Length: 620
Ligand SMILES: Nc1ncnc2c1ncn2[C@@H]1O[C@H](COP(=O)(O)OP(=O)(O)OP(=O)(O)O)[C@@H](O)[C@H]1O
Image (cartoon, helix red, strand yellow):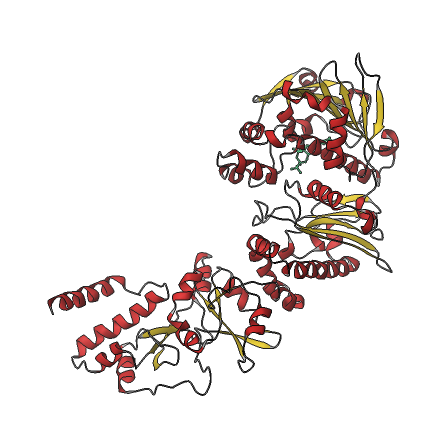
């Protein structure tokens, strides 16, 4: 009883600190894009109608009470207000306070911290975050929301009001209809949004795809009589034949689904008929969302059944590594009461998932031929796509065809495996790659020397996930992939082989504790020595990943290969003093580690030895 009395009075609440910060930034950053507020509010209204339709599946009386879904824009020129009204699901008092006073999104803190203060950059970022309801304050200095939740009585209405300056009020009101009205008291410089012509144009541009009628009603003033008209076609766009839909309409639906400011890079719209009927419209965004690597980030696809919206984020329809794809799946034969749990093991869903996965990979393959767009795509999503090499054995080859690598061939830019195969001489039987921390470190690696000399191309892999990824990719189109820094290298029988010598035996004995073995190289041309991994050993990238994850990492003794034709090795062969030989051998190993970007095992000892060498060099 007590609670009821309290909520009948007007209460004042403070916005969550993040909301106040976001409001402030948004109003300034989005000024030049301000008409998006209408897209956001219509989008919320459309979501509310979707939700009511969904709830009515179990409880038909709900939609009977509220009537056909409709979104109404009401212009009141006299009072300078624009209202966006829906007859959707509505909100009760607690929901109003929760939804319109806080930002529940994970990653909000990180997001706000990433804003730079540079308006141009920030406006892109804010668009990506999804400004939603709060965008109302870009054009309004006062916003009121009146709402009544479906299934409640006339006296269960609630009114929220704020000037966006840190606080809002909430009070109970009577409300005749179920649903929500957002009433904007437009700022002086935003009065253009009272102009029917302007509203028509904005709805056309941003919201024409909305599947419910958007009506505009003007109250009229001294010059105009009241009017009422419908602004959009109100059919689900993906149900229309491809040829009937313009690019602008596709982009407009994309922006609705993704809340992206930028256009999609590409899309694929397909209707599949037969026993398992479904329609899909899948988009590749132009840019990665800020939360691409958050575990609980949105996963893109919206599911509809018989044109009724069922759920956002229907992650069962695409594998994790395609989580950046946005779009719609409409599967009329799925049961309307389908739940996430049911979707998981439901046969038809698996069939659709596998078909959609192939569809996306085909779309990306086509994009791969676009020399302008694909590099941009790759820089945004390449890393995520690589996860697929490990996760999706069925499509491994198709995913591998989408990969791009730096190459040892100068001026090559990024290359695909197919291009590599095309350039490769017919008698070269393998695809060679090298792992390093950066492409430029790979380029400097002594391992490349012999490949350079022979003109053999090596792919340079420097992404932290590359070692993990490549461990799943044994071959491509039946050509083996080989790590240039692993195992014994035998490029062809004409490679001049260096015979293991007495020097090699001495080095082996001197470094027995540190290395697996020492052998004469077939790899090196200019460098004196290098480290080689045995076939079954973990590489440095994987070791670091495991160490960072707190996993036990097995002790790895590398193989040291030495170039017996190198002056240093020739000189070493003449050193008779045992201690001096051991110091030099240790330095030979240490500098091979440094060339790999690794620290010597005992840096202090290395420094001491170098110090001694330098002193003797200076004194000579
Ligand atoms: N017209 C409405 N009817 C019912 N609920 C609404 C309405 N508008 C907003 N809400 C509620 O308020 C919440 C917050 O809205 P807001 O637009 O800020 O974010 P969002 O829609 O969840 O996210 P985004 O807009 O980034 O997708 C919504 O999730 C919804 O629950």
